[in-house]
Length: 107
Image 1 (cartoon, rainbow, N blue to C red):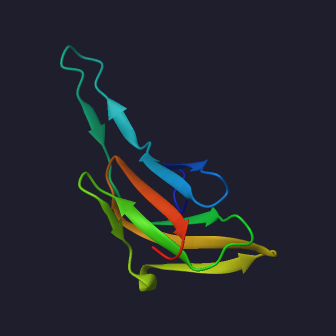
Image 2: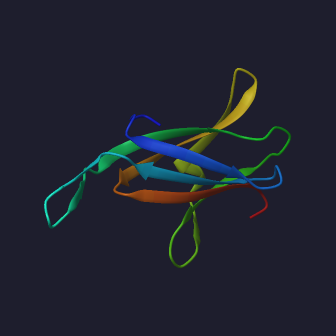
């Protein structure tokens, strides 16, 4: 991630795709009786994720409460980095957390 306050965790699923959780760790918690937590959102967080080798036509989906929303093909890139495929994309605003699914087509 482009900021050290964004933590990226990935869960592989049978080598054919992955679920990616991005969390914002830039927060403070008030230790008073109210105990309020203040989160500092980040803008334009850039992410890069290693992909399994051998699959093609990778797609990116943002997970929302209602569905997997396809990210337009112009919203991510897939390229080889040192011979290993990687997907790169940006989150316009990272408040608390975002879920993504990366899967090979045809979806």
